[in-house]
Amino acid sequence: MKEQKYLFNTVNRSELVIPKFIERIGKNYVSYGVDNLYPQFINSLLHQSSIHRTSILSTLYAVVGEGLSFEDDVDNYLIKYANPNESWNDVFKKVAFDLITYGGFAVNVVWSNDGKTIAEFYHIDFANIRSGYMDENDIVNEYYYSANWESTRKHKPVSYCSFNKEEAIDNPSQILYYFDYNPGASYYPVPSYSAGINDILIDNEISKFHLSNLQNSLAPSLIISLNNGIPSTMEEREEIYDNIAEAYAGTDNVGKFMLLFNRDKDHAAEITPLDAVNDDYYNVLNDRIVSRILTAHRISSPKLVGIYSDPSGFSSNADEIVVAYQLFQSTIAKPKQTSLLKVFNNLLLYKGYKDKELQIIPNKLLDSQKAANAIE
Image 1: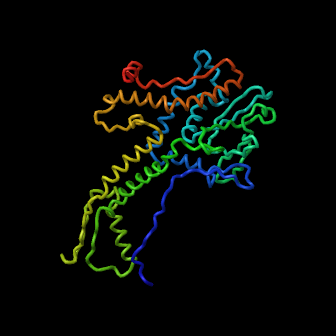
Image 2: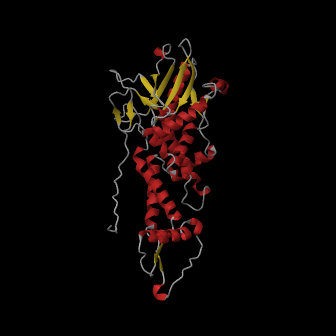
Image 3: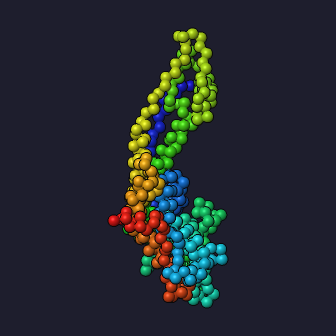
């Protein structure tokens, strides 16, 4: 058999991951992505990039603030229970997390027996909901829930009426489905940071690249030439390679010495260190990726997520942080708070509290005098 000397692989070109909403014959719901698993993909991004996850959590912190409250604290007992196990603030935080992550959220609303008021409501994982089709008035009348859309034979989708008081008697358990407007997205949302998804994936690949380099540090840093002849079989070559790799590669073997036995100087093994290549390239790429991920999240200063390039530390950057946070609060957090309060005040209205209105208690980043001085 002719020995294979070279092996070439092709590199596939990556494109921006944009979901397609597909109406399939025989399905009562619209596919959320080609494989109907786009929200699961979005959820996976949270575990692939520390910058992305920190940006999401920082936004969540700003949006949720110190929680829901009434202007008069005496009325706060009204929001103690959203359901037997959770308060309004418990559900509010989960819903806000989904809104920031997916661009939308879902709430399971349960009406009272007489259908006049809401008895209780629950957060539903947004990734587990799929939309039914629009009617002639462009209204979706039902949504489908499955605990696992990868296995719908085992976890069959269950139909729920969309939120509608007129259907409260016949369908007391309903789904309130909300998402931010996005051009061309009639059924499902697209995350506000969708233009940065490729950068999030690159951040993960860079991290895996450096991990692989550390775990297999022998390969990229040394060339070992054995001048005692070529082993006659591929098995012998692989055995020699495996022995060297096991003895010297990886972080566990850093600091060990290498002992070689040679017949004479002419047949001595040659070890040629390789200087690390492209270090500057990966440093520049990392800075670029961090910047682009923060831009996708519309975070104007990396200091808002704890990234400091100034060695002088926090105190010298306090004014910049306050100003950046105020900008972030007004341009990012406030619009999302407005959307959330609109929904939760409607829930309050359907609970029967017509003369009450919820508000969000803002975070206290720094003392008010410091904030005022910084903004001036």
